[in-house]
Length: 300
Image (cartoon, rainbow, N blue to C red):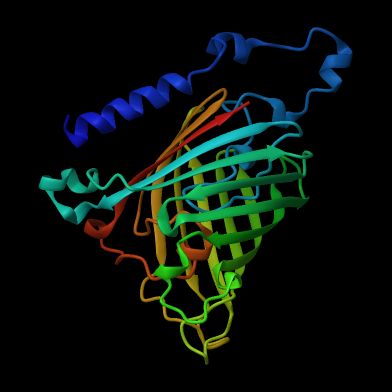
């Protein structure tokens, strides 16, 4: 079976598995039966097609938004990045490179605090994070969240080429302040100043703490569809750090159902962990060097 057929079969199986347990009409039309039930139903418990633009998804393309999950809500995310479009028709413009994937699990501890973990095929990386929305509500014009992430490079010690090698070399930490503002009910813009700490750096004169500035935006064009953009770059000149020749940049769109978000994007970075896509040099910003990708998100 060709790689194209395998990919189509994979998407069809994922789509069937992610299909809602209830008809769309039942979910969107369901209303509280009593006054007490109505008082216990928060804005964030609404179907994703009805939530505020601040609360559509935990991540936009690769990076975090300010959004958190409702208390008791569970979310599964499958993210994938293919090869560069410039690989040509022989490789189906990158679709043959089906080898960069992340599977993540997220849970709403409270309406303000979400925690999650995941595993990426790139560098065999495990990560865990927590997100605290300390300013704003799901339908506020302005939200602010703090994200703390730890990443563990899971490659075998022999792959590092270090002697001596310490387990602590595997660790990297990201601290991020996510700020978002919704000037209208269909427009969202945000900033994500971040600090990435590496336990191991390439050169002894490099700082272990690397400052990064990112941005994101979402423009909703219909009840079920939105356009997205995000990017990030190092803040050079503050401390001596490794170089990042090109900024990380991504463009895409989102499609919502009551319990799903389908995100399709093109980005110049194949990594899906902050430890890598925020600080490592991606491909150039020419469209031919971008990679097609998607995120499949199911919420319970």
